[in-house]
Amino acid sequence: MNKLNDYGLKVLYYIKLVFVILFIIVEDIAWTRLGEPIYNNVKSLKVMDRFKLWINDIKHRYLLLGIFIIPFIFMETSSIYAGKALVNGAIFSGIGLYSFKLLLTAPVVIIFNAGKDILVSFWIIKWPYGLILNMKRSKIWKSVKTFSTNAKTEFEFFKDDYLNNSNGDFISSFKKLYIEIKKG
Image 1: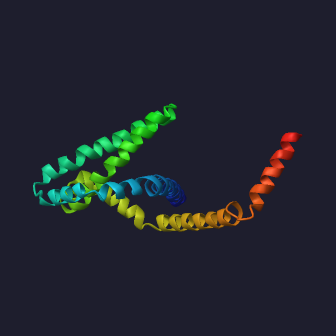
Image 2 (image 1 turned 45 degrees about the vertical axis):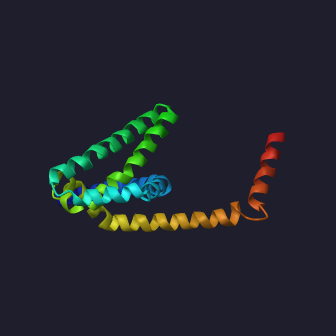
Image 3 (image 1 turned 90 degrees about the vertical axis):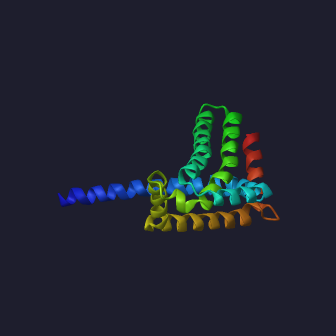
């Protein structure tokens, strides 16, 4: 029985590892490269400052929940449909829906940050928020994040040394090889 328990713990560890890796990849690619610049541009609009003040003034918890949930549902639904469109080959529709999701991210994040104390009092928000926080505090998260950061640094060194090299040794030798193979 103890051996079975050890096996189950190992399986759970690897399942968690896969989810953490996927989460970091999505966070790094989707958020850092696409979402964060759009979020910063939308957040910098003066209307967002007034919006944040308005959210801070809302004290009725169910009204705040409704104001948060509606754009959140649109944001997540557009993300699901964007993925479905991209899988089905409708590239422009998928990109359009994902862009819509990224635009909705700014108000959703502003609403959440401004009303976090009130919103986290609802179990429907507290539970997934707690799961995310626990995942980000885990040893697996920290080790995968460290590996990811190191891999990005190594790739930057490779890119700088070989691909962006001023004399272009790597690229020119690659082109010569391509031309030789093409000539036969």
